[in-house]
Length: 253
Image 1 (cartoon, rainbow, N blue to C red):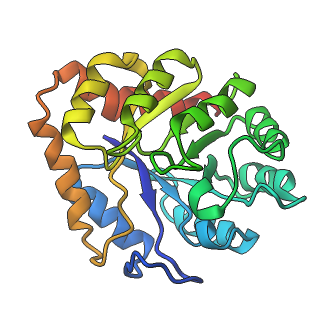
Image 2 (image 1 turned 60 degrees about the vertical axis):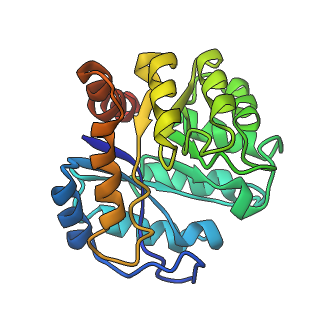
């Protein structure tokens, strides 16, 4: 399986989430314990302080296991050099995409500063993954509006709307051709509905591993095990865990 939503530790900043420092070898050991073959790894420090150094740290982390780990860096869209940093992330550091967290980073997905950033992403074959499910700045409708302005860019809803806005995220995934939905922290009843109604090739899965206070990432292992209780078909499971993320990651290569 491919886990489409994980994080590095915070090395340069502090977070209310707590967490523990771990290395790439320890992270891959967690993946092995959960049956995860490959993981998309998102910058954690960068969500609190979007610096080039945070992207360098992420690239060094995933570079230790390039067949297992794919990195998504971050920028703050209001910085004038953000498009150039996205180009550096993808074309010099070898990262695969961009993670944005409008709620934590404090910007609106409607800001026009995002357009040149998305242009660079699309031209370089990158993917945009955005936090969603946290109003007022991280709703499915706001992210879908950006996706529609950039129809050649794959855009992923990072949490499938969480508990409160998953219906909106599902509806917009159905309606927006380049919008994908990642079940990550989404309640099981919502996950089942998403899998039954969303286009079968557009559903992904993530554990949010990396935010734990244990190197073993026990809560993320439990999230993988939880899938067995969703009552989904083998075809749905394979599409979500293997075929869809593999195709999305391969599209830009």
